[in-house]
Image 1 (cartoon, rainbow, N blue to C red):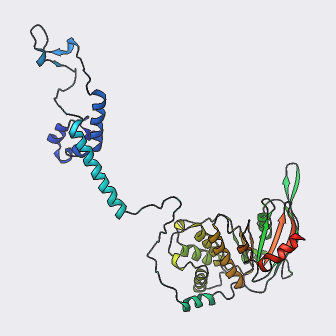
Image 2: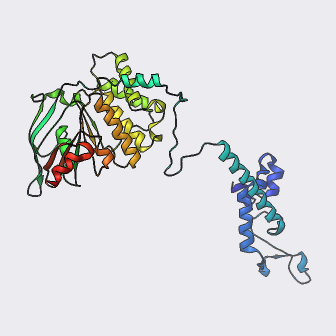
Image 3: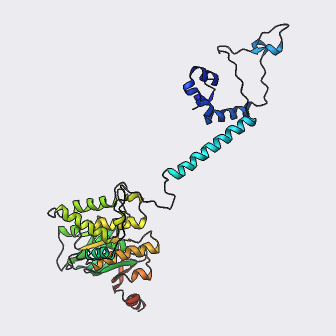
Length: 389
């Protein structure tokens, strides 16, 4: 665009030698900007030529017909008028043109979502349909027997010690508890009390330090299949943003369920999870376009698609959510528990409405000590009476 400003190649030369693209110099905004720059720098300035460069020169030469020579340069004559009505008209024309282009782009072109806003992007057209009461009843029927409904997970005298400086530091100190099918257990405590540490220890995810405990499933020490029977939802929702919700769930089900289960049965189980988490309308949406609450549901769905028969662990599933979204997530967990799934999750500073959705509370204080483990009670009454005592 700079070559066609009329400086490198004069505009008259462009039009005479290359008219098929020389016309662009008249609609080139850079050319008009360059003219404005020249007018600003040289407008009203008088440039004098030394007598040695004047032609013709000598006695009797008429000053009106003298020119200044430039050695090695082909002489050409060009004159342009900068400023005034011509420049004003040009800029007004460009303003109107770009305004019209911008209006057209806003009306017709796709827009990126603004900061803080979310616009769902679908890999293919979404099949929107209104859910009837019969369809809702069918969805509820699919919730039966999400978990195995028989295995009880117990843990006793959990102690966890890690290297610290030149010595050791105990993060968990004699923690006891259990999780039964159809029950939701909330791990609570102040920051640094060891909620996430306890969750990782119960899920056998610790890689450093020494763990001493009695972790049993139906009174028996769990074997190598323990992790296959559990799911773990991390606090951060890490997904492939370019995949759709359905692709993420199918991928988890096909790779993580037992190989003897037929493919059709695995995909049918994913259908149940989609209906359970109310992801029907988002099945073909790209994960990168989901809200935080929707992405959290996908995280839970990915773990459920692996068909954890024993237990589901969640690390602060309500973190980063507003009160309404947090209640929505806990409501989904409640539906899971009612379908027979045992759930243990950490939760930080929950509201009274959230607490009422849980069955049991295991509360820790600093140092990893248990100061309450028991039922929530109606309106949290059992927990309040125990803490007050």
